[in-house]
Length: 75
Image 1: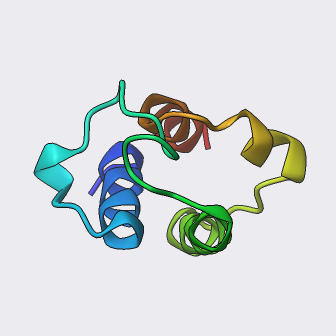
Image 2: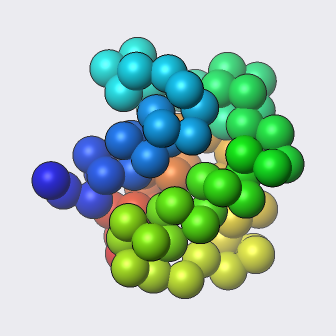
Image 3: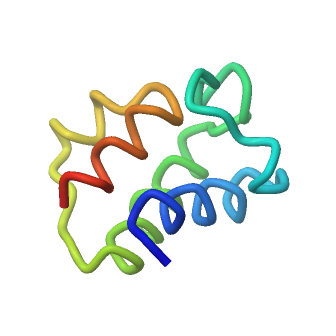
């Protein structure tokens, strides 16, 4: 599984939506319902799945699925 697919699977798990429905243009809050507790869960799960540590600054820049997927691909 590549890093982009890993990121999508984590987003699906945290949001409760099927990975096949998650598109890059979706907003984490508005479209996927990622509130503050879920955002923390998302960061922890991404860090574990990708084997990285995500800074607060990087996390604050992640507003869409595309942002998360691009970050994951760059790791």
